[in-house]
Image 1 (cartoon, rainbow, N blue to C red):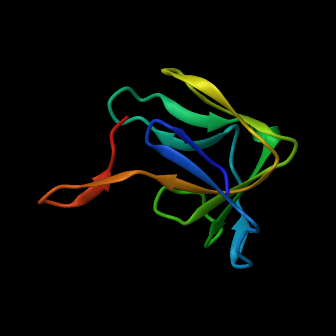
Image 2: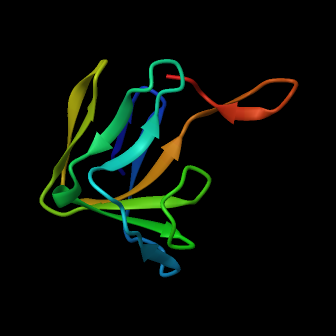
Amino acid sequence: MKMFRQGDVLLVQVSEVPADAAACNVDGDVILAYGEATGHAHWLKADTVKPLAKGGVWEPSAERFIQALEGATLRHEEHAPIEIPPGNYRVVQQVEYTPEAIRNVAD
């Protein structure tokens, strides 16, 4: 199993996308997460991946997956690009515990 981490985003290779994950309509590039501190984004070019999510809606609270068709490049303004080989990946946003709540890690 391969894993790729960029900041607070982790891509975990899976053998197949769950049957109940549906293709998502995404305008433009596929945003995996926005940085709360800077507003920058972790993203993949739209023509290199197919976004899927349980419930069919691409949002941070959904269980999300991507299919890298011919390979893709994970990009962010403050991190080096990461080459993602063809395959299926689960998108994981790192979270942290605070006494008030569990929340997404700010990047």
